[in-house]
Each structure stands twice: as C-alpha cells, then as structure tokens.
Image 1 (cartoon, helix red, strand yellow):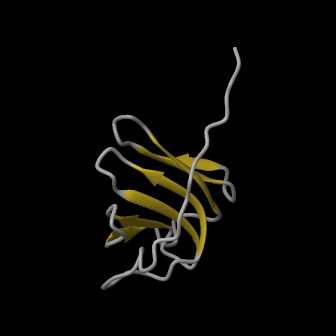
Image 2 (cartoon, rainbow, N blue to C red):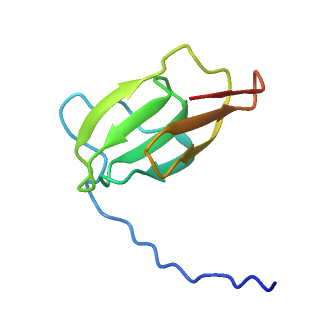
Length: 94
C-alpha cells in the first residue's frame, strides 16, 4: 500500500487568537480541530495548557493549568473526545 503526502497551504491570519480574556499564546506543542470547528491549542508555556478558540480565532475557554508536566500532543476522535499526551509524566488524558 502506497501512502501519498498531501499538500497543505498555511497562512498567517493577523489578529487570530486574541480577544477579551485570552491567555498569552506561547509554545504551542499541538493543534486540533473538532467537528464544530473549535480549535484546540496545547500550550506548553505559559499555562494554562489547553486553549479553545472558534474558527475565527475568538477565545472560548482554557483549562488544564497545573495538570500537565510537558504538554506534547493531542488527537480528537470522530466523536470529539480529546486525547492529550504529556511526555513529561508519560500519560494520556481523555
């Protein structure tokens, strides 16, 4: 079975990821998008660890401050369950 690489185009959207109450975006280790087009950022520094935005970049919520040692990766299942991997304490949280 041959696997083919996909071609993606990315662009910077000025002002995305800002708004009232939005924590500082820092070292982002992973990004995921759920079925409602909510964008999840797994933030290593500074805390909190999980930042949630709508597709336009408006801040919705944050959580996980103090819960993760070294945020590493995330995966969102087809039923929108969020799996978060922490390489510091070698755990996956659901």
